[in-house]
Image 1 (cartoon, helix red, strand yellow):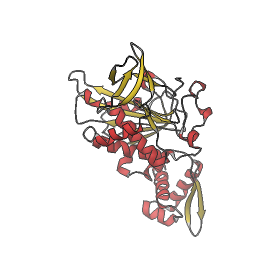
Image 2: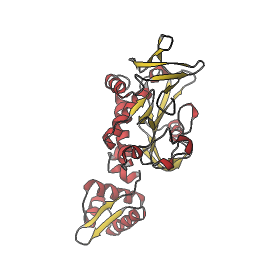
Image 3: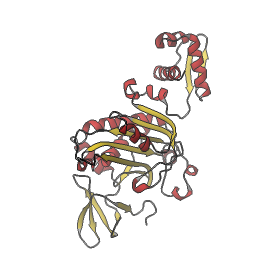
Length: 329
């Protein structure tokens, strides 16, 4: 039933308008009874499907879901074959790591409706209330040295900015190094995790994880995050199609996988344009806290900073607070 239901959902979404039960049966090689059963199952899932004796079936309203049928309407079937859809998971990165160890191919993706233990950098939790896009993708790079993966997170930030702009018509800014922001508040966190073989020091695989706040309202965030986190809906007043955004993110990350690490120029140019840290007064946290002005992005996505003592240095890792964002005044 699930395969038939998803196939009918995808066909109706791609065709648009009314499609006769006869056409659905012939195209999908199923009986009229199976068509009727699948349509009823979709209705139970929240899809509004109009039916007419003379016209057939037409989707007139859809719930905000990311599922197999929705993605089959947006991506080639062979691409969707490498996507695992989950209602809930502790972390999409964790689940994908299990699949990677079991031999999953490059491009394997995990998407969850919600996460119970979503993670960000430095082990921070990421709120995942079920109204965003939470996905992880597996990469098996053709190069083997871990140093080559150090800039990947910045590339991913650009790729997701591209996808958000394509799907939602608004382009986020990037707070160095990998937070996507709108109006000074965070809408997306990115976590890249590299697994290295202990004997050789070579990369085994890289997992790229992203959590994007899409249709959340303020009350969906924990009280302690409401001053720093936001969503596309909260900033624009518009509800967005999460499946469409997820499909565009997968498409952009697939393109990145083909480009990385050789075709750096367009990603670097976009990163420099999108980075909202440039020109701002910042605070560097670490073993020694220092402050200064962010001057620019170097050719390896490092942050060039003029410290208060006049010293100019390039920051390649660590925590950077930007005045006017996330409560830093």
